[in-house]
Length: 245
Length: 263
Image 1: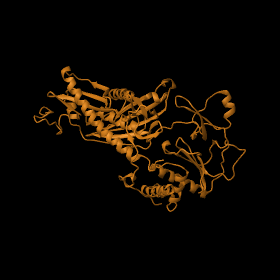
Image 2 (image 1 turned 45 degrees about the vertical axis):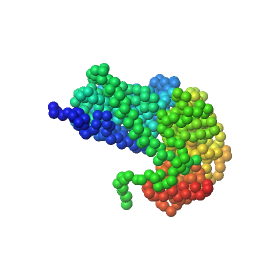
Image 3 (image 1 turned 90 degrees about the vertical axis):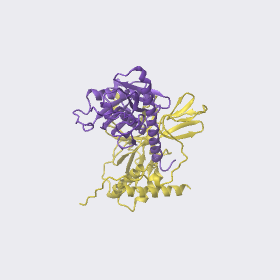
Image 4 (image 1 turned 135 degrees about the vertical axis):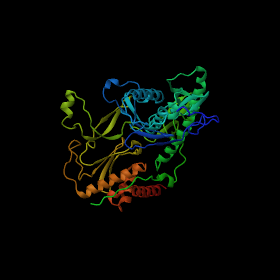
């Protein structure tokens, strides 16, 4: 796609957004009655579903149980119809395993695992449609699902991706922008304290630009937090018991 | 045989048409509840930088100096004295245990028990040392969220409509036909396997559907609310109670009666 410019002279991206603008986010909690917690999120055309089970007793070998905190187990899977070309293996391939590990690292930082020793918390995320920013959508969906399950967390975990084109940092990349090959990073943030739960990048970016891109990602993650906060408050208001005791 | 099919349609949640109690202080994780350090922190909160911060999404409850946040859905936290209903999944395999218990309680049995002690990691130890606990015979089990079972003095209720119910604090609710006479000597280890009459079965089915209606509309479960719901459901057929609009109607009527009784 030689003629495709990711950022026009007037400052518009391929889909008409500004450099720091997020895609439209819609989210819902409690979509599955059978699971302890569940949530569904749409970030533009990226759709992700997260389901949480737990805390419950450790499945399998008891030896894996940690005496002072809970074990967090994450599994990432993307549907065969989620990408442009039909995928062969929905999960178990390298990328899915790596995503699973990253999600686990992210949530071990945020969930207060010391409150549930010797138990296990399972987080399953499935991407139904991948249009860029899949890690961010998964983290956001999983945060809502963990909240829905009533598992105590330090704070929300909000994530967003960011890239760098024409000396400008772009926030919330779509698939077209990711496929163009420029540097891109994914950031997961705990908004209240500003602590970073996970920062991931596997491209080359000059260190002079790092701060700018990081700042754009952090600002976008905070915008995501505003939205998720509104969704959760609405859900809590609606679902609180009809007749308080 | 006639069949009824419905297409999925988004329903307006009942809360929109009902005036909600807006005096509750709702919080989400990361929210500061208070900066006053004089409070003791309960469930759902943690201390960070001299502020009390919420760790779950729910409503703040304050009892004197104790602040806790009650989440919408929680895993059951055992407390000493709670009545629970559960199914035996695994047995300890020691010799004395074999001799003593195998005859009475087997794996797969449904039992009611009382919480005796709570360990530091959250595990509870149960006992069935009274004749009113023990193996449960014929009846219907309904699993609901533990946060919807109201804490009361007793959780064993003999409802006037003709059935009895055990409201386990862990969210497991057992509905069974009221025993004809109280068995004093048999205790809780023999299951009554005589056939249950049709009238009793209908009462139990109706109660089960009523409990499901109350839970779907997120009303607290206790003997009065279940009884009022049962009475409000009588004009409808038992199977109709699972339809969303009838569920709403029955629960609204129950709520109305409960409000009248209180105020």
